Amino acid sequence: MVEISSRGRLQGGEHKSMYFCDARLQYPVRVEKPNPLYAKMLQQAIGGVEGEMRVCLQYFFQAWGSRGPKKYRDMLLQTATEEIGHIEMLATAVALNLEGAPTQLQEDAAKDGAVNAVLGGMNPRHFLSAGLAALPVNANGIPFDSSNIYASGNIAGDMLSNACAEATGRTLACRLYEMTDDPGMKDMLSFMIARDTMHQQQWLAVLEELGGYKEQLPIPNSFPQELEKTDWSYVFLNSNVDGSIDLKGRFTEGPSLDGRGTFSIMQNKPLGQEPTLAAGPKEAHAQTEQNPHISQKLKNKLQSL
Image (cartoon, rainbow, N blue to C red; front, side, top):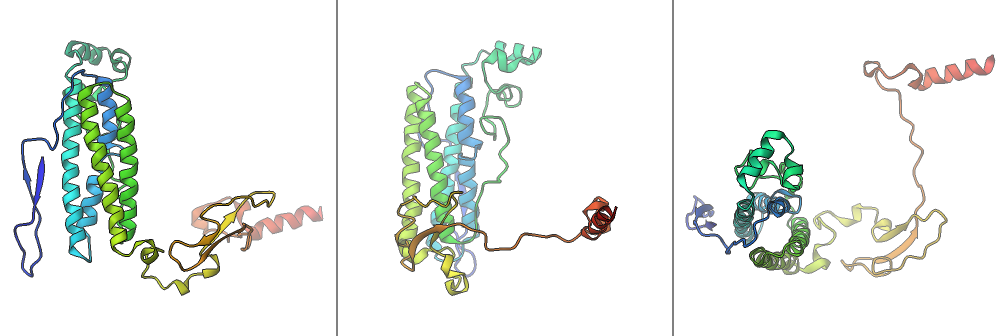
């Protein structure tokens, strides 16, 4: 596993982060019943939108750009480093599950091109590209691309994003837990589910420490709220085509979570104009008929016939 250290200091008293490698895993990983298909499923927890690569990089980039109380930067760095260990555990689990796939079967499949059919859904690249090892991809074999990493520079917004990431990650881990009867895999996932529980709690605890919803909402709380159209700040818009309003909930009545308004509900209706766009530049080469002036001329001509 990887460990973080903040022993050194830069000029000005700033901490510098260093990372150390320990050959031991954060938690034991064992596979009693190797299953190449389950290895494919585990890839979602590595490189999927709910996976560990996502949260690891999300927490790192939030930390590296963190401004404000230093303890939140340190917290993010510590948790991001832990997530590296989770990726390592899952990669080990994938490799151990793949060890149960007969090598000759994989080689034959690679030769005749019918990998999916022969191996019953195993990711062929686990053998062809990685030699029985994990890949930075999701369960469909799509490479991880960082498009779901959120680091806004707003501590409250990032904490809510992190809590959501841990919620979907925990949901995935629970589903993977239900998909296996291997005691070793269940044991590893039980540990990871517990860590997701803690991580959900810690991100939301930051919001509480900062004053809770009342102080942090709306996000960002640094924008003067009097500059927004406050008549619309706490209104739930109902869009039933017949105009019926029968939806009631915490979000339609009672005080708002920030204590600055009262929830209400009203029928959604158009308040703006019907859009009319001017003709584009001739260099864009739209059709002649798309020019409103020419279209009107054509219309007048047709009416005169």
